[in-house]
Image: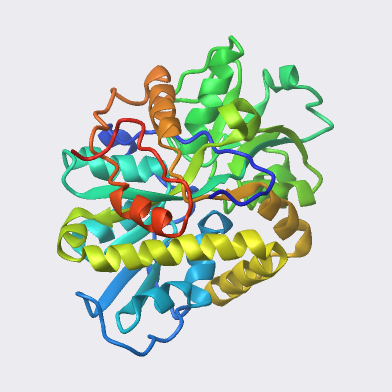
Length: 369
């Protein structure tokens, strides 16, 4: 069930099928190193399930709040009993997919683009999407002295995290719908699309080298704290203002061999999301504490509060939006139409949701047969 918060969305794109874009497919456009996390609660007493350990990967980012809170506060561990959670954090989708393929993690929280990349590049043999985690958290923020209306974006320099990443494709699609022309590869045209790592985007904005950015949280709120203004919330471009920004994926091998462990992790995810829904202020504090432990620095209130409000936590993978995002990437010329049939296996999640008295979720016809 989605958390009852203001939603926004990230225009998630699928640059997965082109080798040129493989390194560009990140969930949020940060770096690429994986780190073992000491953020997990200790293993609970009791008998282990069919695996002694489950290795879970996620990002130190608010759009991965389910993992941040579920691991820190022990919601996952409680459901797993004697099976220990072994968390690892990642800063980019490709490195998490590599870890999943290598068996370094079993389950991951990740954006749609790298999930699609992992699925299509292995002909549908590497992973399944088994649940949703978050929707929203992307905005077009601009220098108000230079850009006052949406039409003013024409002729300006706007940053996106990476060529072919989810925000990049969303922005290219929005430009196309405005009737403007931009070469997707170079970023040159009626708008200058400047691919800039989210970590340095605030400095680029402060220096005046960009006029705005189409970026995820918390980068958007960091820019606003520096004087930028929100010109557009991506949620306004999607039906029901919902789209998937974070999925839960699992290795097909692990799913086959340890379905009880997968189901326990999904129970932990659903219960974590319920807790977030019922305790929004406490959840925000918990997520920020997890970020502080992982990165050494908490987000200040002027960044945390608006960023948190724009992200919606949800069990639903919003599968229909995945296909729409793929269509956007194809339209932009960044992707050959992928075969997404079989990318979802929502059976375990729907079993958990049914037991919890919650509505089941749909796979938009893209489920495993």
